[in-house]
Image (cartoon, rainbow, N blue to C red):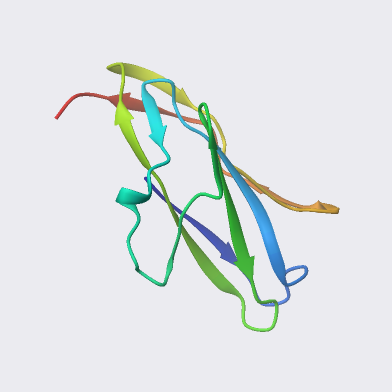
Length: 110
């Protein structure tokens, strides 16, 4: 799964924005180094706990940037599942908050 955290020039503080993704219940995120690639522009999860995948998305407020986030998941159940919003927040700055809209996901075996 790929997510993109896009920052505009002048976005608050350089540093780590926590991005938390709740993986739909038809999928199980995998925290295995085997899947990681050496692509320099990809950010892999800093934590995978149950259905929650957390990333550190870096920002440079002088240039703005996009953090390309990626995780791998396996199918555990087929069906239509709610895909909760991913949330991005800068620690210590509650006003620096963004989220994706809730949607649904159709999970089916290939």
